[in-house]
Image 1 (cartoon, rainbow, N blue to C red):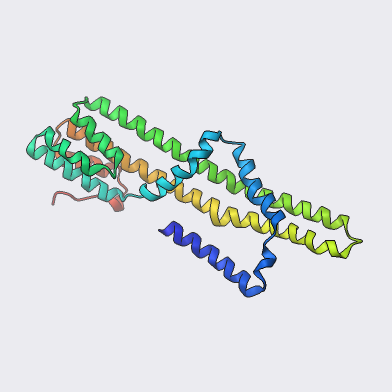
Image 2 (image 1 turned 90 degrees about the vertical axis):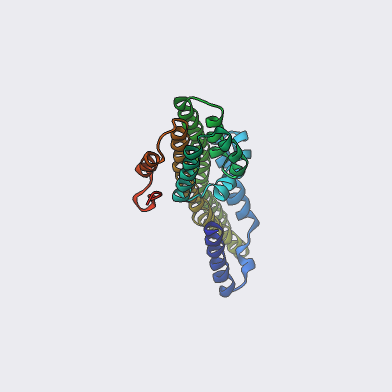
Length: 254
């Protein structure tokens, strides 16, 4: 929600300033859109495979929508599962929990490995590899957004140069100077707008969500391994607090 509200507010502020300053139609230029908007995506696409380009929007949306989980809450969730497993010492209890974990696929897979009787070391290896793969996939999305944030102002500069060349080539025709100058200025405006109000902030937010998801997945892996080893939940609480930031550490046992 903060991502949507932040971007919406930023664009509304810019739109409001344009509207109060005069006709908003003066800021719409088809040539500028072609050079900057379409050009940015075309140049950025050179750095990525076609399959990646097709999946990037879904990856970014999924991460922003589902990836923002509070590590403290997830640590408490793991502790509750560990306490129940320790109390009843029943694998079927964990199996009954699986349908309730559909909103957290990584945790569901971790508990499924425990239910299947996988060795603790193997559980840890499988979950570490899967977490690393997920982080790498999300970082490709960050790379795409950062690359687009670098390209957009550059395309704006290219559009500015095109407009200036046209303007200087038509100094003897005053009617052509205005449109050429509009292209020169608006392409710079479009490039700055796309980079600093969309691509760069979204890249920073996506990177933050990726780091937070990696932390939560690490908690899941530690919890599943501890449950499989039938360790005391108090020890698990201590282990979880070693990776949680100081402000987010939990006190499950009073």
